[in-house]
Amino acid sequence: MAALGTSPTTLTDAADVLALLVLLSEFAMLRSSLSRSQVRLYAFQSLCVSVLAGFVAATRHIGELYGLMSMSFVLKVIVVPMIILRLVKEVRVDVTAGHRIGVATMVLLAIVLSIFGIFVVGRLPVHSRSLPILPLALAAAVILVSFLLVIVRNDVVSQAIGFFSLENGVSVASLVLAAGLPLIVELAFLFDLLVAVVVFALLMRVHHGRAGTLSTQALDRLRG
Amino acid sequence: MAGIELAPAEIQVLQDLTILVFAPFVSGAVAHLEGRLQGRRGPRILQPYYDIAKLFHKETLVPEDASWVFLAGPVVAFACYLTVPLLIPVLTQYPLPLGYMGDILGGGFILSLAGFAVGLAALETGGAYAQLGSSRAMTFGALIEPSILFVTFTVALVTATDLPYFEAAAVRSSLGQAIDPAHLLAAVAFFLVVLNDTSRIPVETHASTLEFGMIDEARTLEHSGPAFALLKWGSAMKQLILYVILINVFAAPWGEAGSRQVGPVLLAIPAFIGKALGVGAIFAVIDSSFSKLRLFKITEFMAVAFLLAVLAVLVLFLGAR
Image 1 (spheres, each protein chain N blue to C red):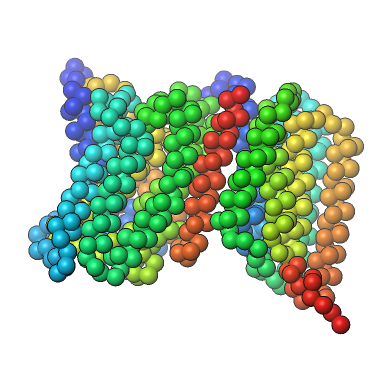
Image 2: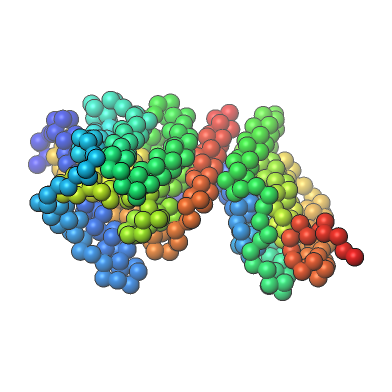
C-alpha cells in the first residue's frame, strides 16, 4: 500500500480527482436552487483548490504554495462564504430567482461547454512540471461553466458566486501552468477577489434596498 | 474438499441459483433495515419469501380485455432475469464459458427486454395506473439509457473490450486503477443508474401505495396470483443483478473465487451476499435521508448521471494521451 501510495500514477490520479471535484462542484452550483447551498458549494470548491495547492506544494516541493494554500483557505473557505452568507441572511431571500432555461437543458449546455473546453485545452502542447494536463483542461471547463452560471442565473448571489468560482478555475489553471509563480502575483489575485467581494456585497445591498429582491430581472424595471 | 473441482457449467448454474434464491433475502433485509432507520420495526427479513409463496397459492385474475400477452409478460421477464447472471461475474473472477455470450450492452438489452415484457403486459390490462406506469417506465428508461451507454464506453476504453469480467480484472489489478478518476466517475454514474433502475428514493418511493408518484411499481398493479409472484421475485432478482454489476464490476470486485475448487466457489456466495447487504444498507440510508423528486425533476437526476458518465469518457480521452 505504502509503495502504491507514492507511485507517480496514484499521485496524478489524486490531483485529477481533486480537479474533477472542483468541476463537479461548479456543476452543482449551476443547478442548486438555494443561495445558501450555492455559497457552501463555493466553500467546498475553494477547499478542493486549497488542498490541490497543498498537494502540489508537498509533492513538488514548492514552498511558496503552502503560503498560497493557507491564504486561500482562510479567505475563500472561511471569510468570503461567511460574508456572503451573512448578506443572504440579512436580505432574507432563500430561494434564488430562478434561471432562464430548464435545469436539465442548463446541465446539458454546460456539458457541451466543458467538452469544448476540455478538448481544446487538452490538445495544447503544454508540459507542466507540477501537474498533468488534465487539471488544466478541467480548469478551462470550470471557467466556461462559471460563465454559463453568470449568464443564465437571474440573481445577484449566483452572479457573485459565479465570478468567485471563476477565480477558483483560474487558480487551478495557474497551479498547472505556473506553480512556481511568485507569491506576490498570487496575492494580487486574492486581493482582486477581496475587492470583488466588497463590490458584490455593495451591489447586493444596494440592489436589494432599491428593488426589494435579489433578482436581476428587476433591474430593467422603470423607476419614476 | 480441496481436491474437488466444479465444472464451469455447474458454477454457472450455481450463479443463477445464488441470484434466484438470495434475491428475496436481500430485498427483505434492505426493507427491514429501512424500517429500522425510519423508527419502525420493519417487516421480517424473510417476508418476501412468504409473500411469494402466498401468491403462488392464489388464483390468477385476468382483466377482461387482456390477451395471452398479459400472462406471458411476467414469465418472459423472469426468464430474462435468469439469463443475465450467466453473463456477469457473480461468483468467479475468471470468465465462464457462457460469459462470452454477451457483453455489458448485451446484458443491458436482456434487462430492457424484461422491462419491455412487463410494460407490454401492463398495457394489455387497460388499467389506467398500469398504463401510466408502463409509459413512465419507458420514458425514464430511455432517458437513463445515455448514461448506461457512456458507462459502457468508459469500460470499453479502459479494457478494450466491454466484457464485465475484464473491467473487474482491471480494477483488481492495481489500486491506481481503482482510484482512477474515470473509473470513479463511471462507478458513481452507474450507482445513480442502479438507484433509478431499482426504483429507489430520489426517483420513486418503492414501498409507496400512492399511484401518482409510481413508475415501475404501477406496472404490476393489475397482476395477481403466480404471475404477480413472478413479477415480485423478478424485481428482487433485477435488483440483485444490478448490485452484482455495481459491486463485482465497479466498486469492490474482491472475494470471488479465483479457481474452480468447491471451497472458494462456495465461500464466494456468503462473501457476495455480504457485499450486497452492504450496498443495500447504503441504499436504505439514501432512502431514509432524501426526499422523492417531483416527477418532472427526475430529468435533473438523470442529467447528473449523464454528466458523470460523459466526464468519465472525457477524462479517459485525455488520460490516454
